[in-house]
Amino acid sequence: MRIAYLECFSGISGDMFLGALLDAGVPPEVFTRTVEALGVDARLEISRVDRSGISATKLDVIAAGEKELPREEFWQGAVSSQQSAVSEATSSAPHVHDHGQQHSHGDGPADSLSNLHAHSHSHDHEHSHGDGESHSHSHSHEDSHSHSHEHSHSQTPPGATVPHEHGHSHSHEHDHEHTHEHGSKHTHSHRGLKEIRQIIHAAKISQSAKDRAIKIFEALGAAEAKVHNTDIEKIHFHEVGAIDAIVDIVCASVGAEALGVDEWVCSPLNVGGGTVVCAHGAFPIPAPATLELLKHAPVYAGEIQKELVTPTGAAIVNVLASRFSQFPTMKTEKIGYGAGTRNFKNSPNVLRLTVGETTATQKESAFPVEEITVLEANVDDMTPQVFGYVMEQALQNGALDAFGTPVQMKKSRPGMLLTVLCRTEDSQRLTKFILSETTTLGVRMRRESRAALTRRHVSVSTRWGNVRMKLANLNGSISNYAPEYEDCRQIATEKKVPLKTVMQEAIKVYLENTNG
Image (cartoon, rainbow, N blue to C red; front, side):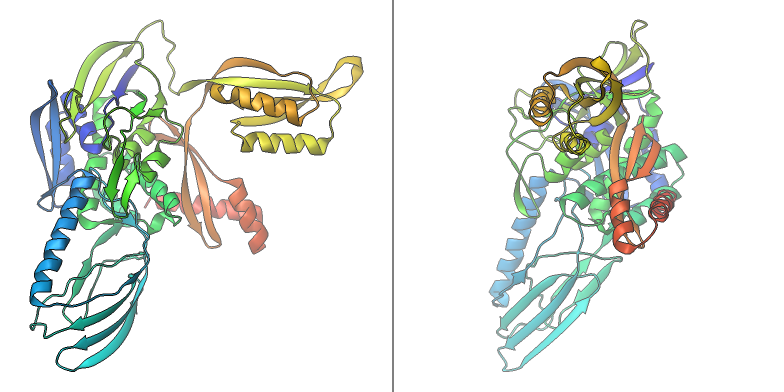
């Protein structure tokens, strides 16, 4: 079986992944044709660079004439520009602002990912101009901010722009623009998942590449939606960031397909350390959306105090990687190095991609295999109510699964076999739980191998409310999907709708969203 192994010892980002694909043999024309097929305002720059003595391929996406920057550089530049603008405006048109603000943003730009958010707004303004004229007005938009302003202008020159900073809490469906009476103009341009799906579906690339790219975007959107407690369809990308993200993710999907491997395997990921500057200020690394995307993946922090795994890189791993392990046994064929933007001293900032064939002695499998611990206990003197409670609490305490099997015990007594599946690192804690919560006098434990498809959730909006869909991933493709029972049960109970109807509606909406 042909496999690809990603070594994320210096993290992973969208541009690093694309550089590694190029270095491992994917022709540049594959990416340039993909960008042309997308029909977005973007082009690619490919160069050979050195990263602490390692020669690597660097790919940059130039979107709307701008090159993507590391997150903190973007926000530092934005703050500097804003301060310069405020300083310039203050010298020509002094004024005072008092803002009441509410914020609800996604993470700031990182590689191809730009600000994701959901919002609504209304304005209340009171102006007092130096010419003695005063007036007040209020307006509201379906897509807008929540803020209030008090202005005091002294003879602002005609046509002068009075810049001011405000927060956003966005929830919108279209691009919009609004202008204040005093000449201050705000323009917002956003793309949501619906628009991005349409762009991808319209591109002349393979259907499997389209499906995979959309799954990566949905994983990214679902993580942001969970972090910010909103619906995935309300997550929007800023215009330039959306172009970067579309190019990075679609090229990643097309390139992964062009590499022609049967399975993607990933190493533990070095997420970096310190803090990252984004829309809300400084966040500890890894950023919230990144950590959500890497749930259940092995991660660690190295010596580099920078953000090494970006949300886009995490989303690519989330969808492509079928399992995580140390370097697998294989006959190596190709090796590629994709360069990151920074050049760290004594630490190559590269992503290594190794392609090869598994050896004949290794069992070929199209699905990931993991090591788990099985805990078992025989119980014949405990009430059914307590048994049910124990299974529920075992799952709440981190068990992968818990179930009971009727058994005939010694002296012909009927009993129950309690079985708990867990990760090896949780076995001691769950063993103690079983011994304290049940009447058993002992717990058996053993190691076993388990084949398990990678699972994730996306949220769909039914006419009665949101329902999470559980998706099973096999080598980058959805092999199974099902609505979460608890979500459907809650809606059925609250809305007095048959449970089967809610479940059927959730599946229908999911398929409609997936097929555009």
